[in-house]
Image (cartoon, rainbow, N blue to C red; front, side, top):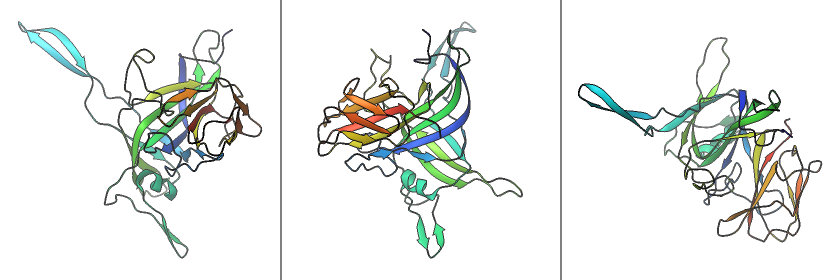
Length: 289
């Protein structure tokens, strides 16, 4: 029976949400601070609120013509070597985001608040970005059904540019410049392979699901079995809530059994408990709020 599982053909519009995680030194998502305190709470994604535009684009391949006898003999295409960079525009500024992106600390003096931009020394933190948009399936049997699609970039950095203009009777918007490097793995640490993906590195990944997605991270301690989610899971299926346990060697294992998703309590319950010191990552569909 056709369903919204594994939709490969779709149309999309809008820009609903942009989540982010700082990455830890192992390249795993680690919330807004880049640090995960062991325990049931873990760290949910941060969010750039009131997003407007994010002109993610892949530069065109570089074409090299071969000529001879006064005519074109053939053309070769190569990967473009231009920097992968673009702007993200949003309508609500949040000083706290600047610390996640560049270590810029907001300063409160009396009732006044301050936060820098275009700083020196210049610093950038490593990020995971997750963009969400509305979509509609185009696959046979489910054409026209609403769903979600988007992108994630697992090796991103953002420099804070702040308000981009002061215009009479004009709404303010704020800018950040995103720089991408290629990644060799998913947010849960599973590396790309020619056998599974057909490639070894990627700058941007596209995704589809019946629901919008986000990511949560925990570190196990003291045999905990119940872990809290930051959003209400849209499904109790482990096909919609992907759960990975990562051992101390960085090897991820997907849990297809032994985990119960409770949408009312917003929890994951393990049986048995993950090993102490192991990391846990959930990439899951949630109920829009």
